[in-house]
Image 1: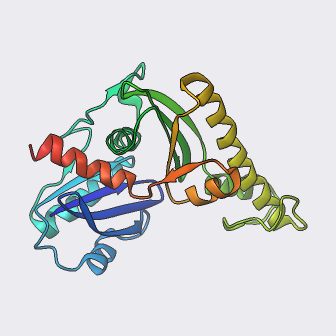
Image 2: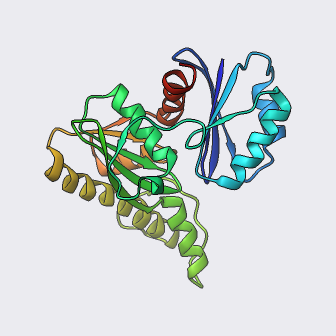
Image 3: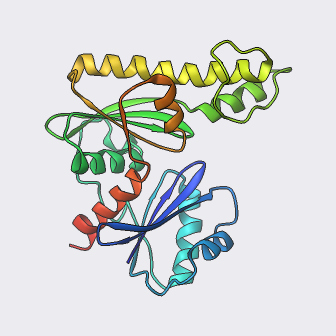
Length: 247
């Protein structure tokens, strides 16, 4: 059984795979103690045969890898170090692309017909584009909704801290809902506008794949036709294990 781990800025997502089947999935906040929460969520570790990690937080990669080695007796494989994502990368400096973005691109290219736009709505909102030839063309990066809320709180004297949720209406009638309307509708329209521009370049019939913790809000308020796949990154980690490591 493979333990697939995606270390992000907000959450560490864990998935257990038997072959292609995801049998269990759970998230642990990145900034909380990993060991105790991991043991509570997972329980029996004896069935884990291998561990593969995709990470965008180098410090946590070292911490989590050390803990898992001690707990399971198995040294985790690290994507970008022990395995390369097997997709043609057309970035001018290929090493600058986050491994999570390449993993998403690779997974989407195996699961859905290209060309593709992948929207990952988390700490950042990223757009990754896959050509008809299954090439990673590059993408765009914008602040995520929660990061934008935090920035408003930290950079202004009078605006309150607001938890991300659905706005009550387009035109807010109090400060909280004015902020939510600006952040959520703003992010939704950002996605709509960028998708329109990308489709003008690579094709009107380009499929949109959505992932990340806040993708449902993007889909609801942008009204884009998004195929949501919340486990896209974990599936990609499993594909890389099967095709690049286990082989």
